[in-house]
Image 1: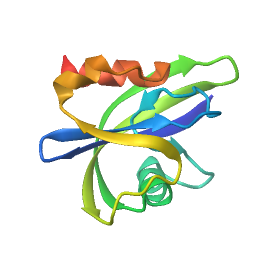
Image 2 (image 1 turned 180 degrees about the vertical axis):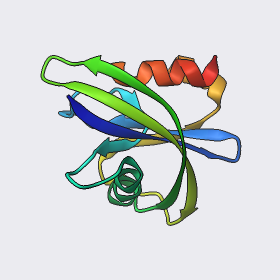
Image 3 (image 1 turned 60 degrees about the vertical axis):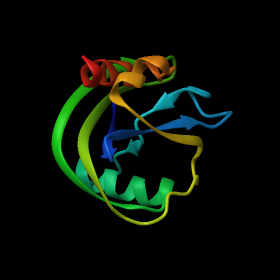
Image 4 (image 1 turned 45 degrees about the vertical axis):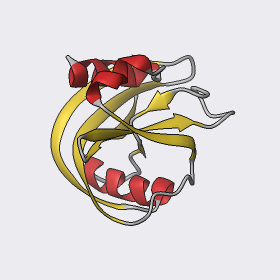
Length: 125
């Protein structure tokens, strides 16, 4: 099982979601940004690194929100979601096709990657 992180990043009452690029599995699905934990890295360090690599922004990782386990065809992952605070930087699309800032109520209107669905449900429940 691969452990992966996800940022629950709220700003001005809206949450950040990102749509995967064509060719990325799962293709074109929405997700909470984050990525794979590298050897020797904590989940918090991973999120800080991934947010800088994927979006060019610095964040502070706060408390753990929840986890979700999902088996895709090629891999089983445990997705660890953390509340995250934006600190600085201009958002860039280095790894995604698109980003959006949406309300928690709007989460149900997006086609999320399967591993992210339980996190979305918990956020708008």
